[in-house]
Image (cartoon, rainbow over all chains, first blue to last red; front, side, top):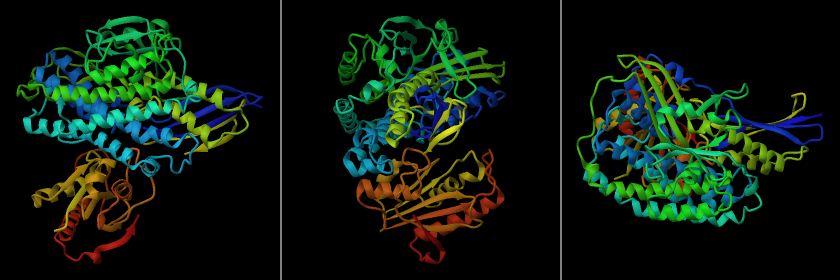
Length: 475
Length: 156
């Protein structure tokens, strides 16, 4: 009799999900699925609202990366107004985007993933969390929390509050920057840089310890997609789309974001509220691609900050023969490279006198009926597409979220881990945690990707071939 | 003089759920110079500032009480919410203790009754009245008056 294992809820991720693992009569894994069981429907209820409200509304999709929605929404608004925003406004928006990366990447590593690395996958789940981390290494935990605070501090200084700031608007930003705020933020830089480097060294030091586990963490060839700057540098705010295959070949480049729907299709499955975006030219499933840190660091030609560039070169050396780093475990490494980059780049921007300009907003009427915005959210490329009438009232909304773009790859990762670790007879907590950790590599934000609400606990079920629940674990 | 922080939190787009934020905003207006923070939710990053204070007052909305309720809070041992979601006052204090080796001498949670938590920014008349009571009570607390008669339970 075949069976199915269910992990529900998945823990230490943003949102609600469960995993089911399907076994055949002999207890071999035949399939594994990552189900996202929350729904919100922002795309629908935004219809009829004014385009101007979208920054405020869509930033409420998420408490972790609201700034990414705010910025992307403002960019879609710029497109509808048909304006080029002032240079100062663009640089300020760039700074807050970096701040979003800093706070989100710090949260992912220090709060969510490092307990696995520093305490072990098989350690007591009751203490495998931030409190366990405090017990193990108080200074490490303290530094992680302060690094996240630095990201939030930038957001608060620019936008007056840490989450859901309405600061960016179509045409620019609401409030200018000043020298006192700049100096306040610059004072944080040395500590932030030191902590980012500490995180990198800590992670690299455990790669050897986890050598037996790493090959099972979503190691497969896929395409990678993200924005790059015109000269091929790592990009986070603007640029054009680049697609790379799992061998490191660029298969599509300099794609105008307005043409994203020629390249990205969205499929649905009956067992999940999370859509399954795919690379259209290759069709559903075969067109699986990954976005986010692993993709961005793979596809860019270089990083324009010195310390992060040094790390990128070391990162690429991991898979010199393959041409691209295909193992999802290295999302963590790429994420910390980006964290370091974000701190370095923020410092560069803070020293730029243009940041103190007072021309921060271009004003215009509705000049286009369609607006598309894209930026690199912490978890990958985020698209907002708005169709409006002559008064700016939304007729149609499409949001393509980074986590959804990783959906096929997350499912593949869960399947790989299940096949590797489950023998059909029993699931141990350590095995459960490894499967969850496979998902955490992607740092999914399910509130965003389903536009849904709530926490993300994990639920794992073991089902037989007739669909009956044989074993179940909830957290 | 005791170093004090007031933290009002809640969702201001869910009507009465924003009562904690509204009360904290009122206190900030009424008491210039007071150390008042408002936020949608509690964050681990608040622990550093809270740990440096002698008195912390958390203000939240609650559907579980018909009147303003004051509870003394002590550090919890739960990590619930420490991943960035729905951190409780007890969780903040636990982080203070774990990370900085100290907690405020006194920490209170003031819960303001919430009656209508649908979408919107306007509060129900009942909650507006309760915010007045809560602000009055917290003002007494901050002024150092004996408020022990008001404390109903101990929460950790």
